Image (cartoon, rainbow, N blue to C red; front, side, top):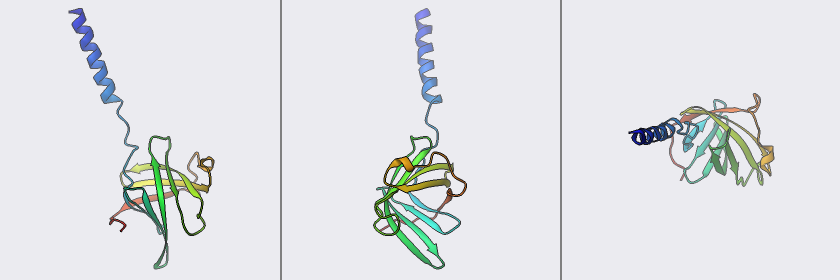
Length: 139
C-alpha cells in the first residue's frame, strides 16, 4: 500500500511538472505582414526571407533581407541581415522583440557587424511597434 502511494505521488508530481511548466506564449509565429503606423512594413516568409518596406508618400523603398528569430532568448531576438542595397549593406540589424499580443510586437535594433551592438532593453526613441496586417506571400 505504501509503495502504491509512493508511485502515485511520483506519477502525479511528474504530471504536475509537465503541465505547469509548459513554455509561455513568447514564441509566436512571425510569418506574415507586419506594419507600423509610420509606414514601415516587414514581410516575413517561413523560409527565413523577409522584405522591409519604407513608405514615402505613395512610393515604397524595398530592402530584401534574411531574418533569424530566436524566441528562447530573454528578450527574444530578431536579426535582419543580407541587405544588398542601402545603408545596411554588409551589416546586420541585431534586434530584440517583445510580443504585446498575437497581433502586435515591439522591435528595437542596432546595426553592426557583431551581436555586441544588440540592445539589452527597449529604447523609447528607437522601438517600433508592429501590427499584423492581411498577408499575401512574396513571390
